[in-house]
Image (cartoon, rainbow, N blue to C red; front, side):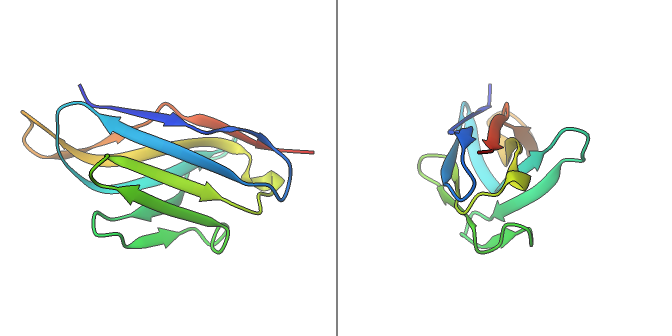
Length: 121
């Protein structure tokens, strides 16, 4: 029932910007933390940024100062604003949300389908 749908990926030149969006829908009772991960071919999935329901954020060292995570609790949506993009930012980006689905007993993790971000000239 619960689904996370991502959008905003694409091809961008180094130094450019991109804004990813992830919207949760379905029978949602509550959403705790939300996060963005990324995975490049042959590499482990890595945590990029997290944001709590209260708005506290954390970032990987590699993206600090360049990326901004934000959310709208009323819309069940999380964004990742990416600036000064580098080729090493190229990866599939996944959103994750800790969601209590109605009818379930507790929170569990839900993942978006992934969106490709390619930084290349």
